[in-house]
Image 1 (tube, rainbow, N blue to C red):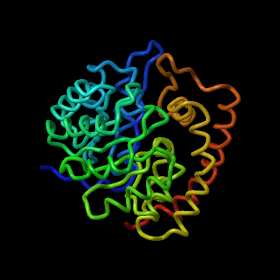
Image 2 (cartoon, rainbow, N blue to C red; image 1 turned 90 degrees about the horizontal axis):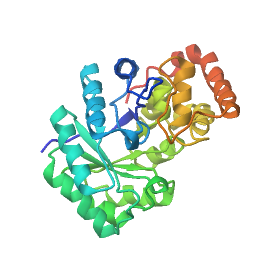
Image 3 (cartoon, helix red, strand yellow; image 1 turned 135 degrees about the horizontal axis):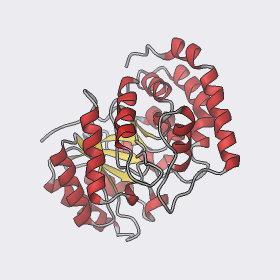
Image 4 (cartoon, rainbow, N blue to C red; image 1 turned 180 degrees about the vertical axis):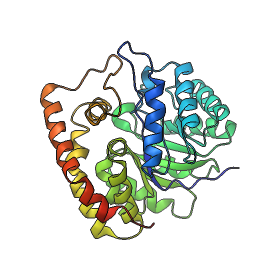
Length: 308
């Protein structure tokens, strides 16, 4: 049974597209290498930010394979969830065959299963695929919250080693951390604005949208928090606050893909039914990014060498 310490910063990668909607694999590989060089702790392709809902299953695996092939040392956590158990199992098995180090599984969306159904779903994949797995709770997208009792039950499975918390409910997240302290479950933030309070409560890091745009700063913030230097972590958190908000002013990943375009990392093309960021929000995002860029040198000089 493989084990994995989900600690640090794991950017939820965008999937870059050409103007015709086909996947831009050259840019995808370059982006994976950029993030690895920035010091992230791992990469997460084919999550919500990667527009997994608009990828075919074959495209899904091709993206995972491309990221694995592009990097040297960082682990790759493949998003492999689906709204039904058979598809999640197939994507998980194929991701494992492709060489993924771990899996991220969103809870089944649209179906709105009961809690017993969620347990059955996750245990079916965990029983069949011998990789570390992260349960992903994002009820704003799925229509169903994974209750703390359910997470605590799932934490007993040896392959379920992580929990990505994006419920927005800090009380619920804190309860999960409290009740799983004696297990191997690592709790990761799925909401950049809540990463710092989650680490303060005992979380271990973040699967981050902002980490695509500001990986060094995000790593510095999480690294400082994990080291117990909360004064420094708070300073970075507040400096990144405008970016955290700007990246969710419209549906993710619309704003982050525009930010990637502005920074010259990747095109902003999204697949329908998503649309490009509005002109008003684009101007606001540009200002946030300009403000951050103006401080890059001083910031890195002060925060880059944080030891965890």
